[in-house]
Image 1 (tube, helix red, strand yellow):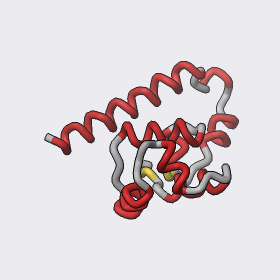
Image 2 (cartoon, rainbow, N blue to C red; image 1 turned 120 degrees about the vertical axis):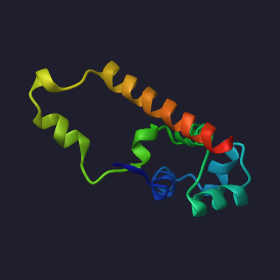
Image 3 (cartoon, rainbow, N blue to C red; image 1 turned 45 degrees about the horizontal axis):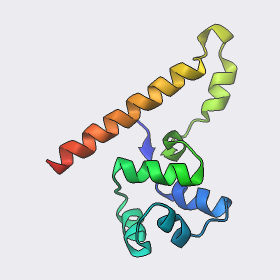
Length: 107
C-alpha cells in the first residue's frame, strides 16, 4: 500500500523554488505550524489540497510508491489503460476516503 511521503512536499517546493515559508503563507498556515505538520507527518486533507494547488501537483504525486506508474501504464495494451476520466474518478475516491478517515479521527 502506498503511503503519503511528506518529504515530497519539500522536494516539490524546492524544485519550484518556493521557500517553505512562502508555501505556508500560500496555504494560510504559519511557518512554524507548517514545519510541525511536516515533522509529525500529519495534515488534514484540506491542507494537503491547498498545498497541492499551490505546488500545481495532484495529491497522488505525494504518495510514496516504489513503482513508476507511467512505465506500467505505458507497458499495458491500449485496451487495458484507464482513460483520464477514470483516473480522475479514482483520485476523487482516494480524496473522499482520506476525508472520511480524517473526519473519523476528529470524532
